[in-house]
Amino acid sequence: MLTGIGRIEMRVRDLDACRAFYGGAMGLTEWGASEGRGGARSAAFVVGESVLECVGDPGAVVGRLPTGEERDWAEVPGSVNHFALYVDDIYAAYAALKGKAEPRTLKHGPEAMALGHTYLQRALLDFVDPSGFVVQIAEVIEPGEKMQRRRREKRGLASEASDGGLMRGFDHLSIYVRDPAATMSFYVDKLGLEEYGQRDVDGTDQTVLMVGLADLEFNLSEAYRDKQLGAGIITMLGFWTDDADEARSLLAAEGVAPGEIATRASGLPFAVRGFTCVDPDGLPIEVAERV
Image (cartoon, rainbow, N blue to C red):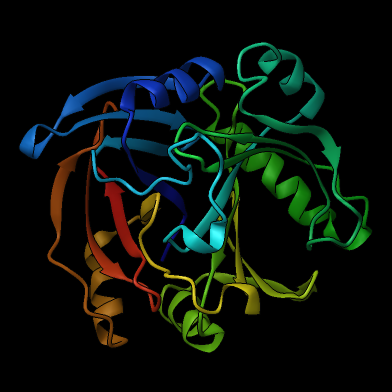
């Protein structure tokens, strides 16, 4: 049913700062800014085959205190903890970003994760955007023989979707959940995503699902048992489909309550046609096709 990440929508208080970060420092191609209902300004950035849409909102959730310090993530509403942008070469990425996105936003890097930390070993750069949201740059360096198929698949999909920029797509998203059984029923049984594996990551139960280039890391942690999930800094997670009508019918047959199909501008050279629904933790989901 789903072929990849369509868009990630962020509500941001300072759109100009986010444009400078994602378009200027990160080097993502901005296809254009627009003004929506109520005068809300937005900017759409190309990330491989996906779109990162920043929407200006004075009341947006942020992960920073008034002093500029980062808030404890347990106190920041929202299911999505961070996302990572895929690159072929972490050191080339670091050289290209050095001096543009630091020192204020760079947390560390390049740094290889411990082998076995998650199902694929990666080398990472960690940044913090103007909203206090963690943005990683990731290169998959997994040496395990059993994982090479997925490593090659990701590289191939990134190459096909690339617009020639440094960032080839969304490598992974970290999403926290309250009820893993309900979450897997929604994303696997109803949306049809493929489960790749389960493991304990430093006391967090993690299940990884695949959709195109991206890996969705669903996490259950006692540390965030009382955290408010759903929409936060990330207010919409969108997926591409080849047929929005068929996808909507299939979900309705599975007991999901999808919204009506509508066509909207995407900020890119094409419109999108799709519908929305909500996952078990209240995170808005969009399923859409390009038109």
